Image (cartoon, rainbow, N blue to C red; front, side, top):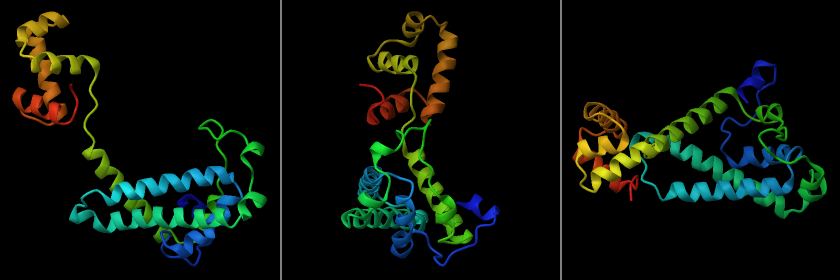
Length: 207
């Protein structure tokens, strides 16, 4: 939405685009471009995401951002659910059968200029910062993804196979194997073999 202001869209009355007041108006704009069945799925996704976030421990430094993101999802879902319950979207908005399939190659166009006109630059920037901060927190928590060769190394070492034998099985020299393992420990954020195997086991990276 920030791009819309660069093209002359005037700021609107809602300073915080995560409030119920904002979303009660925003949902009418969604209905002009998104099939009602798609809006229903979005509401479910927001509800599921909000519930999942409720079960997580919130770092103290992230409390404000966390509150904004959960409020956005809660109010967006609630407004969509109320809008759908009214029956108006079914008669007014595009039906899924009348619209192209919703894909990355063929998305529906959301009227971002209309959404931007409901709020302010500062409000939009604050929402974006909160979303980025929460996303970065989840990304940092996520266990690293391992390549098949890395998983095999860990499994063989966890089974007690000597490093020299693992190197031979995988076509490495012993020196090269130590280099590969050093990279793997760095990737896992650990200092060595014992810690690496403990972390990989605890996070389900190996069976």
